[in-house]
Length: 282
Image (cartoon, rainbow, N blue to C red; front, side, top):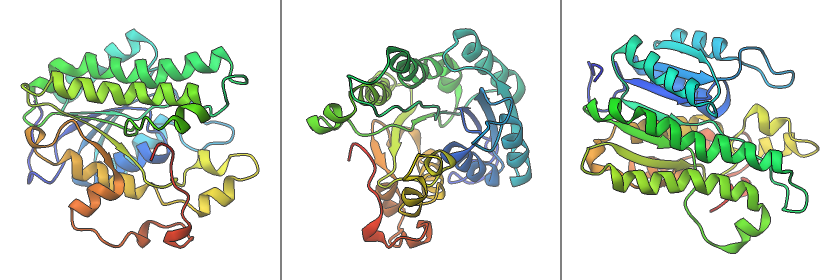
């Protein structure tokens, strides 16, 4: 168990083990936690800059330190058992424990069944569903030792409306695999005091990946909200008592409304609220 030196609504001294996070929503969540003085262990593949996407695990670590946190960047692949086991071992060895696991790494391919390749199908299953299960599984002994252990997965509610599976079956199966991990682990760990929840945005979120979408990237970005809304929502969840908030499929708006937020315009990237692009699965 790592030390929590501040109020219960702070992540000061808490240790977060995150998959991915060198950019986008994951980095925003990490920086919000770092502002409290959290320790962030980041397991990501981005040792070198992507030709179209800014940021590496090392630049993310620099940003985390600049924001007031402590960072441990680890180059590794959430698909590899030894990399995930090594990240857990390093987190415990470096910071004394793990309080939070954040399953952020995810792959996306929206092609229909005729067009999606099995290589892409396997990639999404390995990163999204298997990676989430494995990072959570390997972290369980450390999480049980935390005084307020949390697993938070960026995955959607289990909406069985056929239009989602019918529109992008391979992606839906992979994302719902992440959500089934939340559902099952919350039940499995309820006596251990480890909270297990999912968080999903109500709208599209402005990230470099969105902006790089062919043809519609800039248009979708303008109809999105900033990653900060997910960062603020994640912070709210992760500072709640773990025994009182588990097994939930939260949306960012829901969480922030529970925290008393009624005006979401500060998160908009320019479009009026009524013109924001809704996210999948809602």
